[in-house]
Image 1 (cartoon, rainbow, N blue to C red):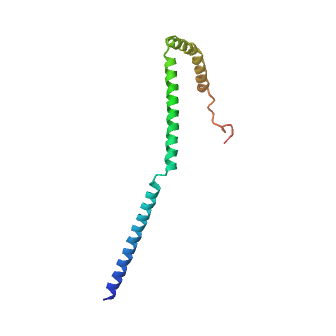
Image 2: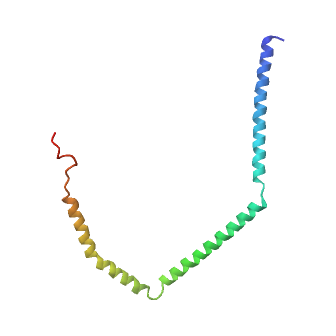
Image 3: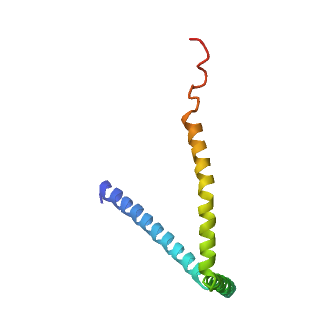
Length: 120
């Protein structure tokens, strides 16, 4: 055997060692993932309990929403809607006055930038 043959065998051995180490790491990682994926009865119970409580909360809020919709659509719905509309319309003049006052303030704002009083 020549020196080149020996050195090439050494390189092949290093490559094989690296490949084996990589395979071992992958295998260990897969084993860890498998171990963590096994169902723990306590975590399953906890999930089931959380799911049940969450479902109860959703049901309770659905009932509240249904009651609100039912109450909103009772016989006096039209009357209440008309009364609310009249209140809004009665506020139009006040809103207009406030908006115009704000527009005047903005329009006639003193636009002098700060520091103009100083002489150059």
